[in-house]
Image (cartoon, rainbow, N blue to C red):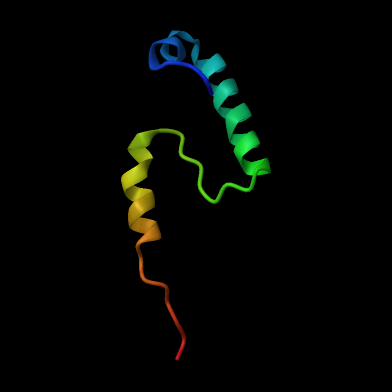
Length: 57
C-alpha cells in the first residue's frame, strides 16, 4: 500500500476500505494464495495452513 501506519490511520474509514480493496485486487490478480487484511489474522491463517491434509485410504 505504501503508507505508514500513521498515514493509513489518518485516512477516513471509506478511504481505508478503498485502499484495501485496491491492494487486495492487485494481489488476487498476481495469484496470491492468501491475503490478510491485518496482522491480527496471521495466527488463524498459520493454524489453517498447518492443519494436516486429510487423505482418503
